[in-house]
Length: 255
Image (cartoon, rainbow, N blue to C red):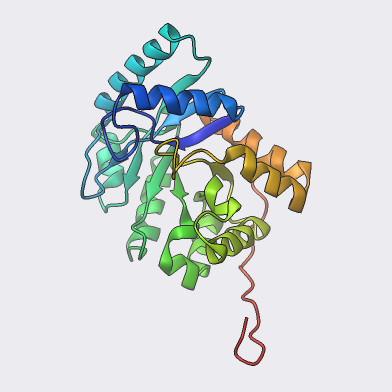
């Protein structure tokens, strides 16, 4: 199993605070059946700056530590970049790090809104050969209220990644329900952990795939796991035709 979104690099953001915590996260990942993790430190989210070269250096050091500890896990380099209007230019300047040096770039919105310039930015990124991957859209309040925003982005070439813990209900019933709606409408393409630690923000990948298998069958599990492998190779991912999220009808004012 490949985890495309994880805060396992030590001491760079609100994920692992030191190397010992990174190693504990690595052991937990292996227990989950994960063999490859894309380390995705926060970048430009008002708190943290983790430019490309610093991440590459950190990934190299962590892989060395894992080898020394005989933990069978491989770390690849990535970055979770908060959306800003100059992302395309920042990529060309060498500041933005795509997943494992491919064309796939993880893009984070704030938890509350989607900038008006998003569609234009995604168009500019795609003109440069990049594929924007919207991370955890199921936890963005504006997308929850206006899911057609995500539909339009996906329809025009963007991808999205939901969080394993959202599938499991760890962020509440409302977010779990919305996450499953996104899966059913072909509006998300990857499941990743977004793990920050081994406690309240751990991997939950195996549990999420158990939920998906029970609800949608093995084919959906395979699609998500294969897509993660295709991303780190820089290959084209599987995409079904996106559909609009159907809002549940109210009966006597109650959902």
